[in-house]
Length: 135
Length: 163
Image (cartoon, rainbow over the protein chains, first blue to last red):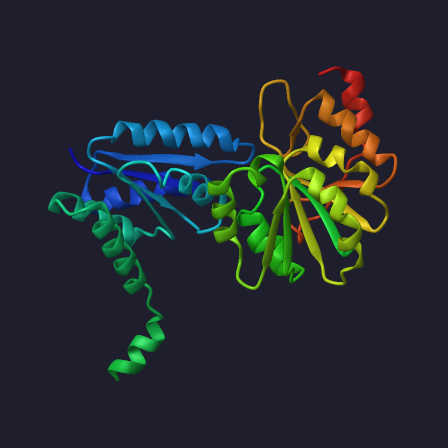
């Protein structure tokens, strides 16, 4: 069984991010999304995260959140102590695509997370700067 | 803006606080006042790490906050005091005067709650608690600083209408 991917975000960002990744890679299994909307209670979001990570008890799960310090991230971090769960904040499309690719490679969750974070960092480019370097 | 801001926000430190209040008023000092967080070392660690850079955070229970409030009043910087519930705010009623800006930012929706704004849902007890604080000072629904604040005026209608 593949490592579970849980996207916890402000609004429906995670759902749309999943759809966007699927446009590129085709449909994906084991990707869960949790949307924190206006009026959502933190306890309900925490319950949902708990349910999702329980589903991946054997394989482990990575919880991706949109912004460090935001409530999706704060709630998710409470599960860091759980077996085989890691939380990575600042999720973007290249990061998610990287994670979906890495799942087949049988790496440890921590290694996967580090590679995802590197890939996301490298994906941020100011195009004008890039042109200056090549010209 | 007044130097001391009391905010009821059941998410405590989160996106609206970091990107909104802290940046807008250049706040260097945040207090999280909650019996639950003060007694939970994991939650303390999480909120400590969620803190925007350049900010200090103190986490204390409601009793500790009430007894240290006099010292806080002497401080010149802006201080953002975050509480999880209207009930905790009501416990601090005696501290509230015209030098304190009181706002309600986020209170999640649950059963038997009335939608007061798109982020604030209150039950009958909470509405009564807010009404009694409002006898002393104005209380605003205020999500982020650049959006207009809404003074709570229509509560008597909500109360009469029955919840």
